Length: 108
Image (cartoon, rainbow, N blue to C red):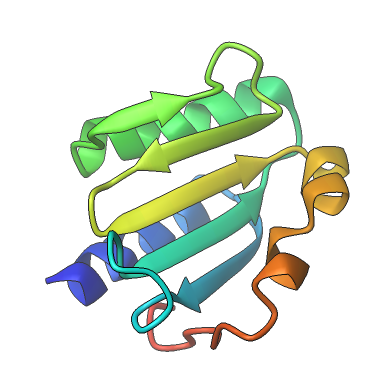
C-alpha cells in the first residue's frame, strides 16, 4: 500500500514539475513511516502548488510550513514529503543526513 502511495506522490510531483525528486526507503530505519520523498520547487508559489496538489489528490493528513513555502512537510501517513526551496534543501541536507538510507528507484 505505501509503495503504491509513493508512486502516486512521485507521479503528482513530476506532473507539477518538481525538481530533483529523491525517494528514500525508510523501512528498517524508522517505524512511523515507510518512505521519504524530497524535492525542490522553483519558488514559494511552486512549493505551495506542489503541497496543495498532494493535499487534494492523496488526502495528506497534515502539512507544515505552507505559508512560508521554503520547506513544506506533507504527512501522507506512510510517506513523508519534504518540498524545499533550493537554498533550504542545501542548508538542511536531508539526503546527506540520511546518506545510509537506500534510495528507492522503484517509486519512479
